[in-house]
Length: 313
Image (cartoon, rainbow, N blue to C red; front, side, top):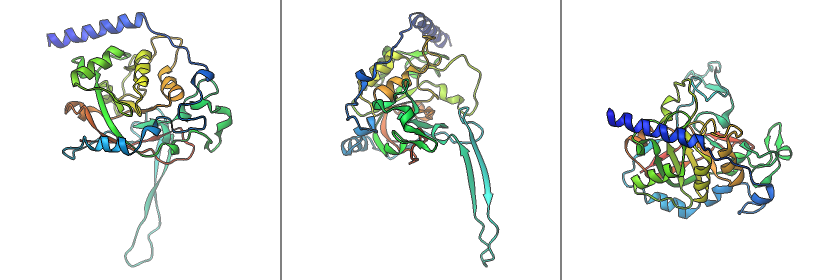
């Protein structure tokens, strides 16, 4: 217990010290970030890294066939503060001799942004400009986005790397509002004896996900800080995910900023964010490297999609 308390105290001290000297960030101009390296008309961003080579590289990590589900159950009990309502329907019993009854449901939901979810590029803009500088006011319509809809992503299968930042620090969960640094990410990689490669899915375990269906009042959410996000973006991942509803630290240590990591990843670099991943089993099994498979719903013009991703090893 004394060692755990000492570790917790050290992490909190580092957290408070880093917060006192928080890094700020100014969005790059449209000329600085556009056009995308995949071309001025590109709508897929880091999904362009998906190909036969990433699939085969991921497949080589499958040795036992174990499947670990990374998606939370989507229900009315918890939906991240957004709308999710299910209304069950029944048809009349048919006069046929086998007496069939059909049942179905009407779902009223912010379906692109509830539960375990992937953020697409229409989800975030810097001013009036989204990824690749597609204009928000020219793209948005009453029936979805004309550009950057989640239907452009497609199936993603790649090497998944779990950066268990909480375990690397000897903690069950990082403190509320803890800003994950570059040093934290490198510490986790060193402990796991792994390196990142282009096209990886980088998954960050904070331990915060255990409150998914039992939300609590808190002073913040642990997650990536600006420097850590920019370092990760430089590694050219296919996506970055976490067990929180934000991936980034909330609130940002700079009180003048709000969700800058979303802007860095989605709008500047065209890298997808995956939120509310269920990572407790991966962490418990110390499954740090695996094949990750996910596919957003093909909803035309949507800003994101609920997901049921799996890790296979």
